[in-house]
Amino acid sequence: GTSPGWNYQLSVLLEGMEAVWERTGDKTIFQYIQQSMDQLVEPDGSIPAYHANGQSTDDILLGRQLLLLYRGTGEDKYRKASILIRKQLTTQPRNASGGFCHTRGFPTQMLLDDVYMIGPFFAEYASTFQEPEDFADITKQFVLLEDHTRDPKIGLLYQEWNEPRTESWVSKTTGTSASFWGRGTGWYIMALVDTLPYYPKDNPDRATLLAILNRTADGIIHHQDRKSGLWYQVLDKPKEKGNYLESSASGMFIYALAKGVRLGYLPKRYSANALRGWNGMLDHFVQTAPDGGITITETVKSIDLGSAPSHDGSFAYYISAPVISNDPKGIGAFLLASTEIELSLAISPSGRKSHRFS
Image (tube, rainbow, N blue to C red; front, top):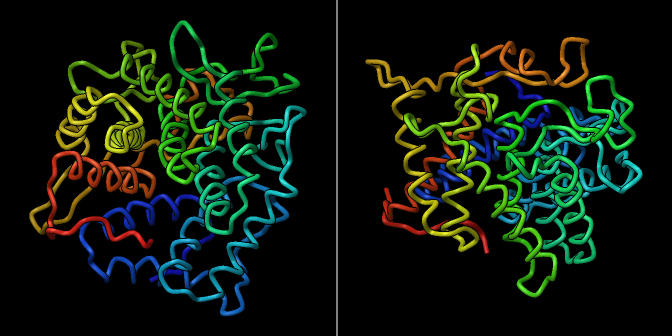
């Protein structure tokens, strides 16, 4: 009943809806996606709620729904709107190494989150409009983050890399933030499995991303909680007081592991990890009401490194962030995970295969 804002949270929810539509062929779900976007996109392709001058990577993600609708309907307004989003990348702040930075307000802050906000849209746009030269730039974003945020001993990625090491909350030695955040790593691994399908099979960078995906998945598997099958808010400190099992990260990991196996990117043995996580998600995070309503619980609302003095990337900051139910990021991750689990178990609610446009 209210007009949505132009933000990444809506896109995560709509990504989940798209996955359900692909599995079921239910046209009302596609209509839901289109109606949501039509509240934001004018007939001439302009987007009043989108403010490119803010230069936030978060504003790129809804471009994925624009490309979906352009393929599905052929309406030119969606093509024009997607071009508008693509133009932001020509002026997006970059660090000295060429990595996209999070916002104009933090022009040296490169986050794991950013490759999910940018990578899949950038790759799909390059594939759709025949701009293969962009794949090298996309690859660079993943490589820079892995090279500078991955701890080789622990096998996990810190959420932030600040190349000049000017921010007070990053290491003066490495430029990284202090903790391994679950959803941050979730953004990164989802970006990999959502970006790789658009790479041409003969693109030499494809092997680079596959290797990164396998290293990232290995780190995630090693930090999966044995008892529940889930993952903690701060991944490497399961026994620390205040840490908790978190739903959005768990859903993202389940999705990425299951999709990676299905597409042949990851070893088949990871299917068991995805299924354990899914069963844990049903046990821990899904509540059903007598009227059939469903609640997805235990989703951290947001993490904003550096936006306040206490937002310093410490363990204390991550576990003190608000936790809510039915957050769109949690719902979207749950829907994405559920559809991939159905695919991995060969369950087809409608007897149909994928309905993605060719």
